[in-house]
Length: 260
Image: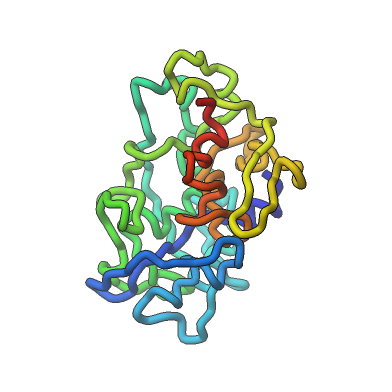
């Protein structure tokens, strides 16, 4: 994916979490494609104690004194939130050929994905941003329920029951046997990314030249699947629910890549 576009969909950093212990947050409704201010990533709308100036971007980014952390050295869009140093356990399955799903550089959180997990790991509090290193366990939502903000388990380092990320997409598509493994067939990365955006009527296949390749993070000459391959966290070119780049209706999000 082009660098400008990657920046435009920097991974999910702080989805609907509370900044006070014990605060429960209901699912936030929003209009797809209306920008970050009207999305679940405007944390001011969902936390008990929002930013003093109502800054939307400050929960993730800062114009000065960004975090300098080796874990995000390759991809650091002026990041302002504490990041996890954990080594994450990636997804493995008998239906997935392990040689194909080997993560790039041994890190499933390559590219923007580690930034996502700085809030979605179930450990780091959403309030730990912009030099505000608070102890706020209540906002570090944990659990394995659909209503929770976290993707990682309570230990913060397991992605073993989540869709695999961090792998070379083309290697998987090329080596897929189509015999029941990896979704019984994966589209090549040059296939058109076909989706009608909710509320806009714009179809990528008709008026855009985007392909699956444009959803990938490029590093070391490889096109890598990341959190941002499925989620547009700035609410610009996405559909309803979870900032997904395609609809859940009819499993369109799955069929973007999987041949079924």
